[in-house]
Length: 145
Image 1 (cartoon, rainbow, N blue to C red):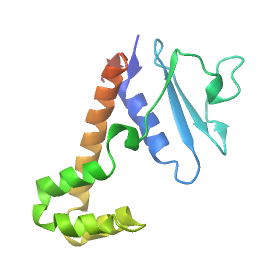
Image 2 (cartoon, helix red, strand yellow; image 1 turned 180 degrees about the horizontal axis):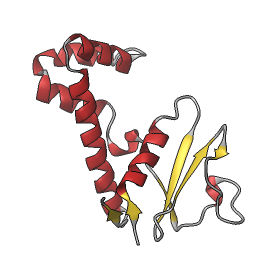
Image 3 (cartoon, rainbow, N blue to C red; image 1 turned 30 degrees about the vertical axis):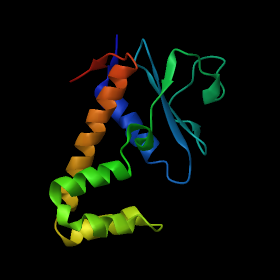
Image 4 (cartoon, rainbow, N blue to C red; image 1 turned 90 degrees about the horizontal axis):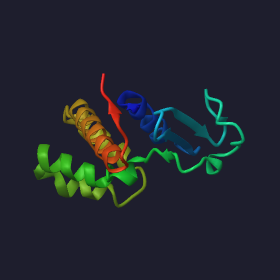
């Protein structure tokens, strides 16, 4: 068996969207089942395996879905985007990351230049590519539909 890529991508989006609350997701290496955990909701939409109360109780057959930082999809991705689309603005964009709220300022900057949708497409493509590579590195079989 394997894990459906879209299920894995949904789990990645869940982990990414945690904000101030920790969100975690886990995929079973063999069955491809995905479990979601949130600090405020605990097990989300799923019943964990019998005898599992917390994520750390899951056995080695479960692997935690990475967050963007683990896949080098933070500032490094912003730099790659800037190099590809607005290389003359690299210094300006780098300045955003010297203070809090950098991503908000970066997105406002892109919006003002009509590049926000281009960024979102670039970001999603990079996320999908990095997640596929992560799955391959972890020995997961992906099911593409």
